[in-house]
Image (cartoon, rainbow, N blue to C red):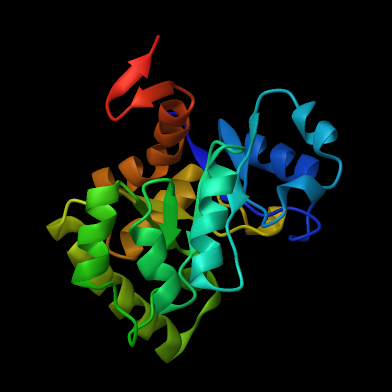
Length: 225
């Protein structure tokens, strides 16, 4: 399978792009998508691109000081990068992100007090925005905190299934030590409530999105061959 992982690298992460690429290749990934907030400042990107056996794609994590600026920045970055992600740190960010068809991935926080809403699910479905599940809390949390996180992800998964959304799972890697193999990530997803087939599809979806975005669309559903 063509598995990809979405990562942050130095200076926004702790590992260089080349170190992340080497580790991801050895773990069995076909490629990584570097999603730094400022893709123009990736440290020694050519060294990563020279690593054989793995594809390097430069995307962008979209951040802005306010929601109006966020919408504008999504539009600007869409013309420059093949993959855009937003982290739903606030309700306003989630609202804008889920309603923008130029966005590829909305990483939704799994918090009991901030469950995925029906309005967000409907908007994401309409605009074909994938919902991301960062599984790193399952690794790092313990006790009651982990139990609350598992309850939150279970609630969010119910809405994802109800509205037939496109989930994506990630380890949220900011260092090569955070990376997990596709098999391990799928196992973590099953612990979190994904079915085996759901986990495999969620792992494969990043590659599918990249392939779709690489095509030349002249209009909705119209591809330039």
